[in-house]
Image 1 (cartoon, rainbow, N blue to C red):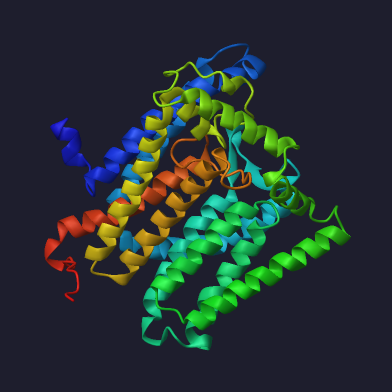
Image 2 (image 1 turned 180 degrees about the vertical axis):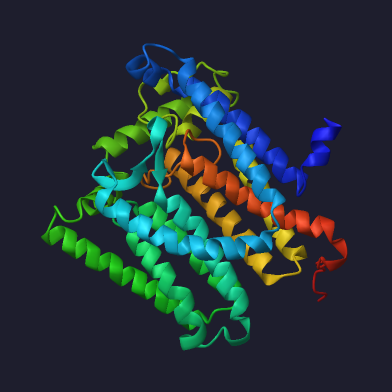
Length: 386
C-alpha cells in the first residue's frame, strides 16, 4: 500500500473520491444490468459487470497517465485536438449512429461507441483556459479578446446542440463561468447569452416548420411540457425513479436487492442514482452528493494555490463541468429537472465518456501535483481582512 501511494501524486483526497465512486459504480452497474443480461446475454449477469470493470480499470489507468504529464503540456496537445474535434462533430452530425433520432456517436470495434462531444468538451475547456490566460492584458477588448474566445464556443455548442441539447447547455454554461472568472466583460458575456437564446429560438422555429430536419427539438419541447404532466414516456421514467427512491428509505434495500431496475429505463446510466438510493438509501444518496461536492471543493482549493492562470482556469473549468453534470443527473432522478439523458460521471456505465471523465480528473491531479512538487511557487490564499 505504501509503495502504491508513493507512485500516485496530486491531491490524495481526490484520488479517494474517485476510488469510492468507482466502487459504487461497479456495485450499481452489476445490480442494474440484470434485465440487459437476460435480454442480450442469455442471463449471463457477470458480462456487463466484467465489461464495465475493464472500462473502469482503463479509465483509472488513463487518469494515472494524465496526472503524470505536466499540465502545461496539455495546452499544446489540446490546441491541435480542438481542430480535430470540430470535424469529428460534423462527421457525427451527418454520419454518426442514429440512436433515438439523434446522431451522437461514431462506432468503434468490440461494440463500443465514441461520443465525439466528450472530446469536444474537454478540448474546448482547454482552449478557453489557454486563451483566457493569453488575453488577460486586453481581456476587456471585444475584437482582440472576446471574439477569439467566443467563436469556437459557439461553433462547438452549435454542432453538439441538434443531437444533445443538455450537453451543449452544460458546455455553454461552463464556458460562461470560465469567462466570468477570467474577467471577460459582463456586457460581452450577456451578449453571448443573448446569442445563445436567439440560436435556440431559431432552431425551435425551424423544427416546427420542418419537423424532419431537426427531430430532436420536438423531443426537448415534449420533455419540458411533460415535466409537470402525468402522461408520457419521460414521466414514466421519473415515476419509476420516484418509486425506487421511496422504496430505499433511509438505509436502503441493501446491495443487489433493487426491484425497480426491472422497470426503470436505463437504470445503469441515466437513472443509476435512483438505483443507488433504492439499494443504499438516503444515506447512500447523500454520500454520493457529498463526494461530488468534495471534488469541487478540492478543485477550488487547488485553484487558490495555483501559481499560473492556465492551471487555475483549467482546474475550475473541468471540475465545474463534471460536478454540474452530476448535479443535473441527480436532479433529474428526483424530478427537479426534466429528463436530460446526462450520465452520472464515474458512476454510470459507459465507454468513452468514462474515459474522458478519467482524463479530466487526471488533469486536475496533474495541476495539484505541480503545486506539491513546487510548494514555494504556490499562492497561499489568505482571506481579506475587513
